[in-house]
Image (cartoon, rainbow, N blue to C red):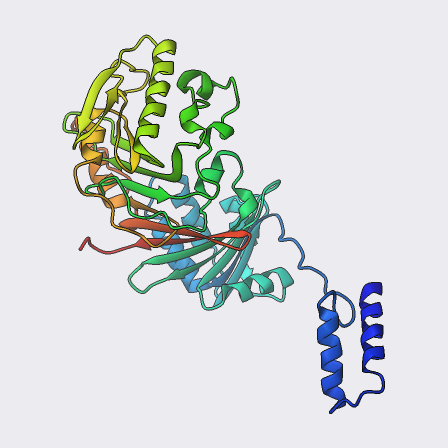
Length: 399
């Protein structure tokens, strides 16, 4: 405040003896100049921290609709908790609730009609035109704020705001950067899950792996390949249904490269390190004109026989040869404008799960989990010191 008063005094002396057209205008100029360093009067206090746990506010009918959908996730605890909360909803147009530990039973007990509570009022203002707003403030973590809008056809739009500092350690690979990820490399035909991202800071995978850790010992993740000098900063992953008579889904990972020859040399050095650490053998492999290698006898996980190929744009690694053939079948993902994106196809996952259950336990009558939405689409972007994530849960039949 002393610096503000000194600035105001200097400005007053500067204006002394000068003709000012109107007193309010001169006062406004004086105040605006003072605001450059502080404020006219006392500096407003920063908004208080959110209370611990989960806080929810919004339209009661919208919350009831969301809970009814979650009840379809039988036989999960989420479905049971959603049913209990829906039955406890108060008979009013707007509702608020808080659960210090986020447990459904505590939220059920904490539901009430809208009151004059300042925290819920602040959360309601952030809700805007959306149906619901919430904040999850975990102990020892950064708060996650969000809002939910429910369409008449059951589609759900979920907007999340996360602090950039929340993406520490390996989570940094999920923090979108300013640049777009660009067109994909992997096929999107029949994908169960597909994601493509250009994280802020690139892909310094080696920096995220503690030296001497199990991951480092088993897979040499601190090798030159993962130091970030040959990788241009994008990663893309895809999961596909299992082959007929197989149980494991096919999966592939594409790492964007600066130059194909440098990337090929780096991954060959990486393969040599694995050969020195494991009793396995290198086999030549190629698909679609791209060449690489497989370690067909590295069977440390079910159906694992990892292969790689180097294309002009990426190093593509597959769980096994079938994974790479599927991932590079000539149907790459279309270009996207967003810096980050992912799609989860619940309908295809249910179909794959049903086929798998039929092979493993024929006649058991086991039913796959019935997700009340067909597909999840996620997009993320940086906004100042926050990461904004838009999740769309799509209902209705496939078009």
